[in-house]
Length: 120
Image (tube, rainbow, N blue to C red):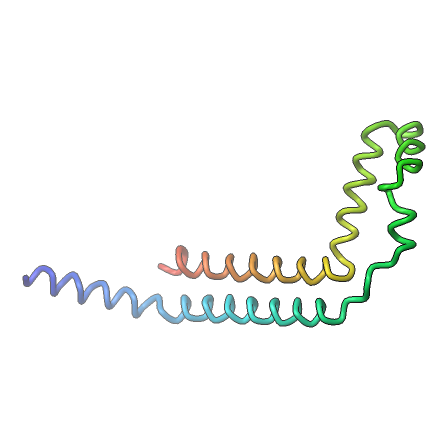
């Protein structure tokens, strides 16, 4: 019984010593998460409808892909598709999802660091 009281007292002392850093990291993570989700909701609400001209003249067009493959090969087609996908992440509704995912990931990193590395 006496050993348990000593252990509990020691654990409480350790928790108190690492508490300010952990609280700051958790608060930062929560602030990033909240800001990211609010920004994503605002972007989603104000996103314009997709433009049909962009879809018409994109790398998805088979004529464009055939010409690109003839000039640069399969690697050029794959790189054009990758570039178009990455570029599409920063416009319209996809931007809202990108901002939300980035906010969740950054908040998760803060929570992870606060949980595992705040023992110093």
